[in-house]
Length: 236
Length: 236
DNA sequence: GTATGGAATTTGTATAGTTGTATAGGATCA
DNA sequence: TGATCCTATACAACTATACAAATTCCATAC
Image 1 (cartoon, rainbow over the protein chains, first blue to last red):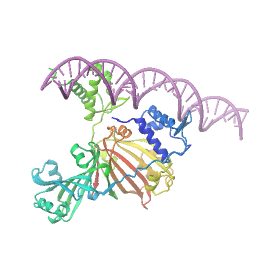
Image 2 (image 1 turned 30 degrees about the vertical axis):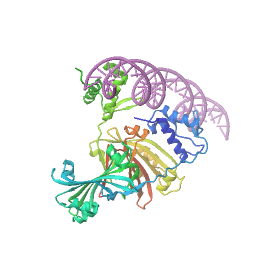
Image 3 (image 1 turned 90 degrees about the horizontal axis):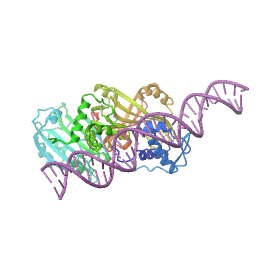
Image 4 (image 1 turned 180 degrees about the vertical axis):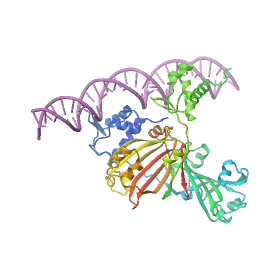
């Protein structure tokens, strides 16, 4: 369940909040009872954390009165990590730098349902990796109905771009019907491709694109490396 | 014969008893010591069985407290128009909220920037857990500017609802300015509150809500248990 | 105004119980 | 031989509960 100690994390959290100015020097912390409720742990676990902080001179407790912040706390270092931002409109449609798989095969039940075709109908499958600055950002898999788009695989291999290929096949105008986002743990193969560790969190986006008449033209799934991407939903 | 391993039989026996309603969802199993005495095996053999059940999501253990039956995991589709309570009631479950922290304190740099106030200005902090049928679905933290909303904490403690409290404070009409979504691994405290394992994937949503004149009224962060929710972005 | 007394609050301490982890070793089977 | 299963022991981490000791707060008396 917990690979690292709970009380350490609680001490770190309180320390960070002191550093951020949530509790001014000389100010009082919430009571042990309140803290234990907030963190969802026993009061003794909070006491362990407070005792550690007291030993390091950050706080001091007065029986019957409370726990107080001792002196001026050091600046809490705010992580300035570089993050990649990606518009949600690009989810599932990211132009690929690396196509790893292009094939045509019968649709399975899920794919058929999403594309509103019969199970077993032919679909094109395109898989790849998108990168930025040489770092893999996302894996994607797009499923296209083969019936209305017979030439898609050839055009994709020629142009290297999914969007350009769709346009060349007469589907210039398509809109996103819906996007569903959830969090998943990386499986070994995915972790390898994204250069993250197995079990690291990923953002999985599932989208269906429809043409002008509301017919599905693409069923796309994208797995983003969780720590490298923030999806921004404009207005939503 | 006894071809099958002991721990498997123990797991199967406990699983059957759970299914029979002998131990209700959220209820506590006998202690490992009691179980090892009952089955006449070493405590570690019982632990092996319990670990297997935990890996399959049937039970979850809390150090020092016991092993508890996990409620059935369900997926809740959340969207721009579909709020938490609606999604849960639509799934035939009863939503509930547990407020773990309500306090007023100076804003730190990040909070001030998001709410477009000065660092050090007073803000209200509300934290809690959203649950469906007693099973935790999400952790949330909302930051409100204290200036325009002086009575918010009192109203929230009275009503227990954030949206209702906002309405009572004269902010009936607010919209989401932006939402940023990323995947995060659960830290120990978060894992404890969501009853998932440390490192399990979570969906973190950061949103700013503004009133009719575009003034920020809420800066909210929500951590969803990754395997229990799907965010749906309509239209995209 | 100021002191007093008592209730409520808050930290300190003690004890026992429960799960998590580490180490070591025996038994069985392919 | 090596892997899996099971036993045995010890200790660490956390929970649960109860009570003691110090402080704060407030109504009341003077």
